[in-house]
Every structure is written in C-alpha cells, then in structure tokens.
Image (cartoon, rainbow, N blue to C red; front, side):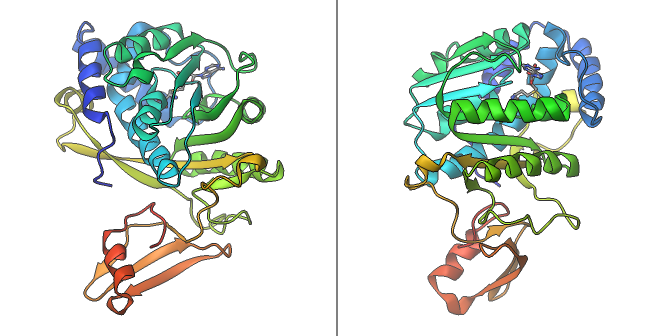
Amino acid sequence: MSRTPAYAAELRTALTRAVRGVSERDLARTTEALVSRYRSVAPASAPILASRVHVAAYAAYRMAATHAALSRILGELADRDLAPRSLLDLGGGTGAAAWAAAGAFDSLETITVLDQVEEALGLGRELVRDAASEVLAGATFARAVAGDWPQLEADLVTVSYVLSELDEAAQELLIADAMQRGRAVVVAEPGTPDGYARVLRVRSAMVAAGWTLLGPCPHASECPLVGRDWCHFAARVNRSAEHRRLKGAELSYEDEKFSWVAAARPSLVESPAGQPNSGRILRHPLKRKGFVEFQVCRPDGTAGREVVSKKAGERYRSARDAEWGDTLP
Ligand SMILES: C[S@@+](CC[C@H](N)C(=O)[O-])C[C@H]1O[C@@H](n2cnc3c(N)ncnc32)[C@H](O)[C@@H]1O
C-alpha cells in the first residue's frame, strides 16, 4: 500500500493549479454536499457534478483517491503483461483512469475519456495540458451519455466509480456497452458492501459471457465471500495540504478502499495476462516472527487461512513483502 503510483505527484500539482481560482469556502461547502451524496446509495436522477464548483470539489477531494485505486489495479494488470494500445474510459469525469493507465502501460497510444458533464471534461483537459506523458497530454475528452456512447473500440475499457450513479438496468446496459467496445474491461467501485455487490453483478455478466477474469478473483466459481464478508482492497493516497484542509484531516495520507473486477474476451486468453494462478490476499497479512499468516481467496474457489513459514526460503522472503490485495507469493 505504500507504493506511490506513477504521476501521483504530477496530478497533485495539476489539481492544485486547476482549483486555484475557486474560493475555498465554496469548495469546502460543495465537498461536504458531495460527500453526503456519495454516501447515499440511491442512483442519481440528475448529474451530481452539476457545476464548475462541484467538478473542482470532486477533483480536489476524490480524484487522487480514484487515481490511486485505478493505479493499483492497472499496475497489477501491467505486471501480468496486459499491454493495451488504446483506452476508452466511460464516465471518466476528470480523467483519473486516464492518468492511471498512462502511468501503468507503456504500450498506450490513445486515450478517450467520455462523460456526460462538460465541466468535468473541461477540467480533465486542463489537468493533462502540461502532462509529461505524451499519450496523456494528447487524450481526447468528449461528451457522451450512457446508453448512447459512440461506437468506438478499445483494447481496454474502464468504468471507474460510475455504477452507483445509475439504476440497475442502466448499470447492466453500461457493462454490456463496455464489453461490446473493449477487448478487456476493468470496473472499479468504492470498497463498501454495496460497491462489492455491484462488482459481483458485473463479474457474473462477464463470466456468463465466457470472458476470462483477470482479477482480483483467482477462479470463476461463485465468490466464497458472499453472505459473510465483502471483497475489497486499499490504496494509499498521499494528501496534499489543500486536500487535508478541505477534508479537515490531520493525517498526511488516507487509504482508499475499492472493489474491482477485470476480464478479457476469450480471444485474449492466450495473452500472458490470464487469470491469477495463486491466491488473492484479502486482508493485511499478519507478519509474525518466523511466519506470515494470510487470509486468501484460493484458485479452487475457497477462502481461508494460509501460512508461509521461514522454512519456505525465497517464498517466505516474498511473503514478508506481500500486501493486502497482492497475489499470494
Ligand atoms: C464518481 S464520478 C467518477 C469519475 C471518474 N471515473 C473517476 O474514477 O474519478 C462518476 C462519473 O460518472 C459520470 N456519469 C454518471 N452517469 C452518467 C451517464 N448517464 N452518462 C455519462 N456519464 C455519467 C458522471 O458525470 C461522473 O463524472
């Protein structure tokens, strides 16, 4: 969790610059309203990011966190040799997934971010304007509404923190649209029980369509956590001074909890980025003297305790470095 995503510092600087013109009082008041709106699980009947101040508040208080979560997910897929050349980000807002993808994949050549809110897209464009990454600086931000996305195709489609704003029928349609357009699809949601429930429905749709799960699940059987826990992970976010002020927070960091699922079309299965073939670590590992204890989801579809002791040599050394959310060494 201490791994800092690529471009996190650059994004923070761009965010500070972009929200400079907005009064701190307005930002703080709007942030409060957004926090309580995002706590509610009711789908939105009108765009939540309704004005320039809403968009600035979202970017200032949420974007570093969604960027951190996406960076963790996409970084793992890159480590497992997923190498998309094109990214399509549906409901991409101010572009958190675009920043994360540019940081994770050297292979990326084009980025398209689509969203219903022009103000969010405008801020997204402003943020990437001076980006060091050429592909990020050249990203397209265009207006489109769910259910009426343009007929684009991409190696990777991301749907990041969007589903909670839609009713269940619209969520299903959005995922079908994403799967129609992408060779691989990544969906991220807040790491809450209801975020996990939405991710589970996406997972079922992916498995039913014969797609291969790329993560976090090491198997395509029923999730062993259903009814007793919820699958979620955490990404560390360093808070800027403005971020701390805005949230009235003391700590210099926060941990963003997220749930996710990623899958690839059957034709991609021969690519090296197949399903993870070792367990997924579901909690902070307990690092004791001479052994490390893990809670894991296993490739055989069960979940439970695994212990790696000092006797395991190299594997034990990897286990000492392993973190919540990693695959089991
Ligand atoms: C919580 S924000 C997430 C933004 C970004 N994906 C991220 O991870 O930071 C949800 C985004 O979904 C967009 N959205 C919600 N409903 C939409 C719809 N019906 N059509 C297009 N975009 C939509 C919103 O405008 C907003 O930008």
